[in-house]
Image 1 (cartoon, helix red, strand yellow):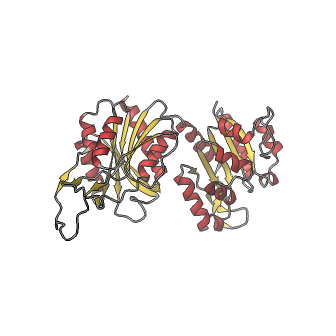
Image 2 (cartoon, helix red, strand yellow):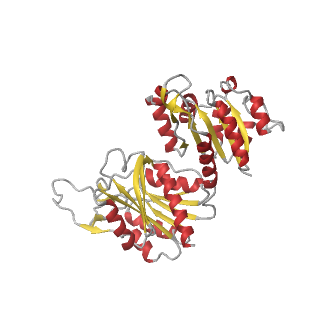
Image 3 (cartoon, one colour):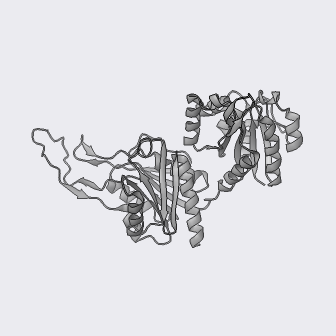
Length: 396
């Protein structure tokens, strides 16, 4: 029986949390409730205790029945943290790492997936601070159930009311299903750019920040896979809970990926590996007075193609960053590289792709295409893994 921690915050929609709890119980889910002080102004803790048959967690300084520290014991037991309704206040606390009550402290202590169902006045929901906090939380992997539109409790008309109970419950069950669906898989993900040195000062590179590859690796980790991340030079910290191998050049990326992929079940080549490198690297800074006006280049190894030639039982995912005929080039790459899935990005648009927190893509495979509209890179990473599971399952 999976365990869900249901966070309830101070909003008129708190009464619907009772229905969410009951519907989850009908799905054989064990629900523990954490309430903010303001939530108790709308629904009493006794109501949730009677429904859940567990003591409601409100006071973070009160020990559990067995003397346990509840924000730790519940955080450890949770397979999903669902906050419904999620007010603007709790979104801000979660985004900024504030821990000043039972719910916000538990949020920092848990490794469980986070599912948020915002509810508030339309002006509050559209406020730039709320939008920014939601973007931060999405980038960290949180799933947001969009609020509904219509008449609000305050009498206004607009977007902001708590999503319908069936939608919240279905999202919770989907999150629980994802929780360990990659358990047992060995996954290798490449990320970031490579740097090809001209001399000790100058180099050739590209605009990749590594964010997309890092989100792919983190999503696989959170779904139970054993993950090795092979990263080119980025400003990103090594993600916890997985193994990171740092490289600099295309040659180093090639060696590391081929080595780490030897026993992998799935390899995702999200790195933007340089296609060319200087044919002659100088060990000393080349003075501009004597520097050549042209640089002789040589091809680097196509790592995705090398993996495709010796693919074996591995599932191979490639990326294609294009500015025109995106799907056409991706489909050609799928065949030429013997890949199983190509994530095709149109990098010509503003706000998506290189160095952005959002992305949009078309997932191209031999069975067809799946279009993913603009979303956070973490959300796109989840869609990629959903498709990998579907395709691996279809081929047995």
